[in-house]
Image 1 (cartoon, rainbow, N blue to C red):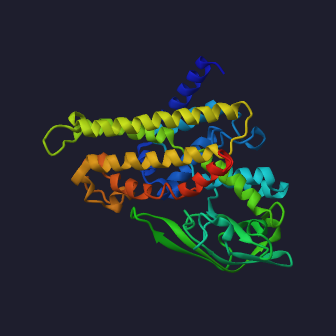
Image 2: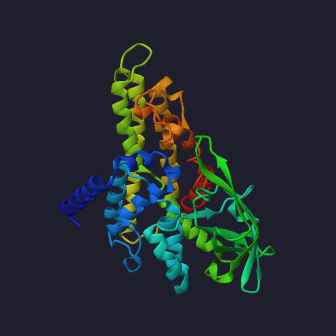
Image 3: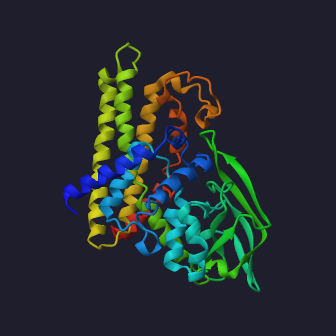
Length: 396
């Protein structure tokens, strides 16, 4: 596409966002994964009705047919507008696994609900003691006739308390190498024997959970692909997860917000932060890191557009993007200073109608900072990502 065509497309996206993104949606977007399900589904439906809910999917399964640059522009404009995230577990993760490796029956059963947002999914990967070392997972699935009997525990399961289904990695063979004895199951969260226990995270919100499986019966027909080949499908899924984790547009919005905040807030000498050379220097350093990250992302996008396979390079985006996120969130807490102290989860959730003690931009500063501490862990810890780069790029 020409530059003029891409500019026209960007305008179309901006017009859609302006006409469909409500103040309530923007406010709820600050909750991230903790967004109320009803509001999340409302925004999902707006994109679905526009046929824009699955930009990266093949057209035969409801995708837009956009090229990578159009997808990039769409994601960038959504982030800059402060739109709620589309829960990634369905559209971004299990959906591509199902349409790539699933049976026709599985596609018919699951893809419509994933597309229209009527069914929510969660991801059953991590376990106590099996996070970054995911291949050591112990949740078992033993075949009994037409069913698997699943027993075990998953942890840090985002939105398990809201989800209708969970896609889970389970051990179906204990005698072979760890990666070779894992299968990929689709499990109805209403199945008898599933118990969900909440984990209130450091940001004060509830979106994480423990999930226990006790003699849960799962039809063999709910297995994706071949038995004991789940590790292959898991790696495919994680590639989709990490490729979009750089968060360039989100960080660009954060930099712009910091510059606006610096005009409003003052340091201990009474001058605005915009006049504080050290604070401005820290913003500038963050922006330099951002532009470097954007350049790497653009290079990878161009490579993908030319048909090249991207592997370990996605790990670099994850490392740099998550570390930049933490830098910018820490700067916002510094900027709002004592306004960050009266942290009220009810205010963030919209349950407290009293006026904010500080400016509106201070309300979620601590919450975002606290949750952001985990950004270098989830999606594959940055330490593990460096190992991936060492092995896949440097051949170490």
